Image (cartoon, rainbow, N blue to C red; front, side):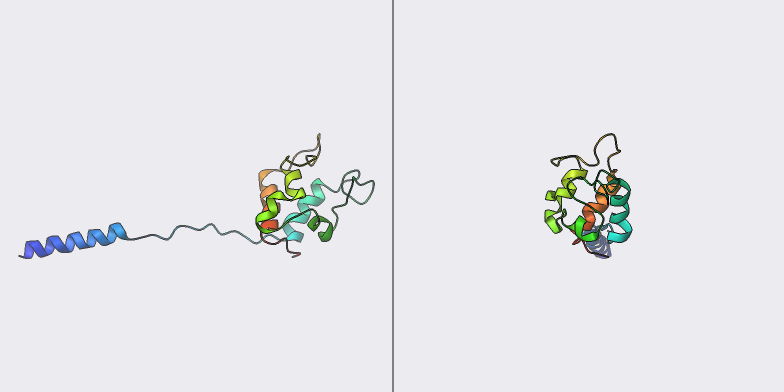
Length: 122
């Protein structure tokens, strides 16, 4: 009888262990800041003279939050924005144009995440 009880106890414990659900690890996504994360990327890659800077700019400027926001979309629509399509090479014109170095994956992710988080002026 003790052997049967011990067997039932072991089976019950094993059942609990097998059915135990673990919480998935959720990656912590930092909040992107326009002034700390996005603006430095734009300033160093897009605002030189002849591009989207203060002088001799091409079509539009990207010097201020409002100017960058006008080419952005937020939330789930971020990937269809003019800015995102241009920096991944799927826009009407790829940015920055050759021979300039394209943005790297981390820079693109920061800009996209900023837009997905609501493109806040923070």
